[in-house]
Image 1 (cartoon, rainbow, N blue to C red):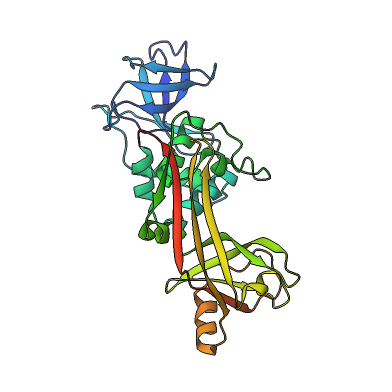
Image 2 (cartoon, helix red, strand yellow):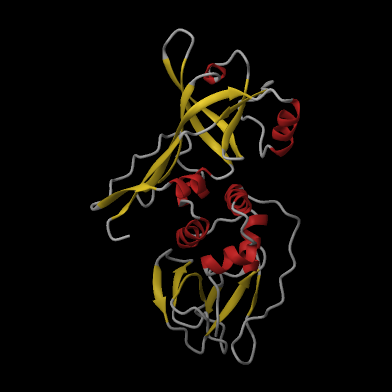
Length: 301
């Protein structure tokens, strides 16, 4: 008998059909998918360690309502992909698919990291599904994000409300790691001094092109005041579930991109339009003179 995360374990007397019990496999103890399994039972929602006997078999998740049992003589699962309905993903599926594509990870690789069947991951991404907490924890770990982010919880709450680590380790990041964390695009914060002399910090959608941090804005906006000045740009990530995270700070002169070919190139290669909407055709470029960062992790990492 072999299984993947998300498969269903069914226990029943094949002679009488009585005493049927089923649950979702939420934990594997062997990489080849052989028993035992951690099973979340549908009747109690409890998770127990199960060593399946001769009255148990595996069912593969195909749709929200049906599954085909594993009836192979040698106890191996069918490798034929189940027929799929037209894609109609739920919120969790959309977040999983978006994060996977953002990182350039194939479905097969993401499934391998999360120790689940690629077919099951495809189901999660394409159909309204309600995966268990264990499944979400494995997916979050595989994609380098958090369960809260995949669920969309806490969207309107500021980060950092979880408990601090008992033994945190704060370490400085080198320039190369800082550049890697900045990545190619995302949301960061620009710290500027406005025309009336007051400081302001404004979030912007940004790109990193040719080692320059660039963003679009409106000529009359607060962020337009960055042009011609030395500014600070900050981006960070907080993992609420693990109480750890990192931040990167870039400091350098900002200028308006005016050369037509450069503007055209930036516009054509932009990954996203500004979330704030409106006409934002002024490109501002920040050339970091210094790039620093710090990361908080458990002391034993």
